[in-house]
Image (cartoon, rainbow, N blue to C red; front, side, top):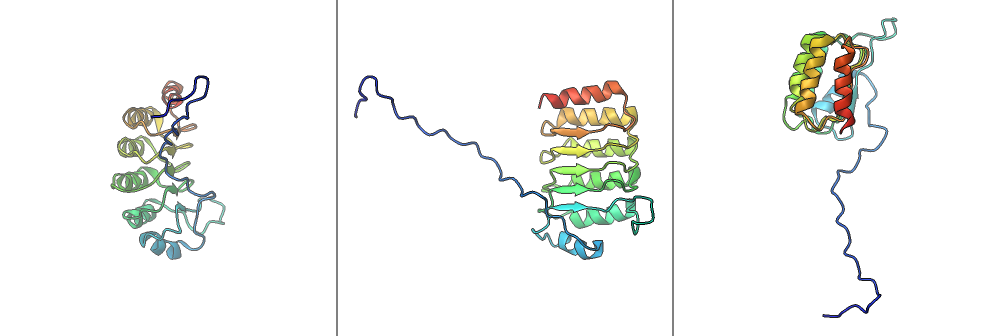
Length: 195
């Protein structure tokens, strides 16, 4: 065994690199076209698609149709066995509590790689928040949830707070302008600041 001369530096062992999944390319691969053309690709698990975004209901006559609970149920059924979609944006569509329950049922499916869920301005109330919170508590892949501009209220805020205490992987939960009391919203922010 060779000894190092006094004063000479010992060679350092290379540091082990932490294993991280390669980030998805930006921007996400959002398919363009009619939903009827896109859904078969989603259902077929086409890896060229990693984000699904429904057009918002602007209420201005420009959007062909609003996507309500029944349409979202149909979409969620198409996503049940998908392993490539990591982002789902259903914002500004009138899902309500019923649509939120369909999304929660989708989140309960094992193997779903969803990392980001956007449900801003969807008319979700306390009941929908409870459905979502029970599913969010068990989704380690999910790191970002947007629920801004809904009607979650104190009961919905408490449900989200409980989900955060169970799911330590959630890094970003946006609930502003959702009728959540400031005290609950502050608790949510404090939990997220420590992650």
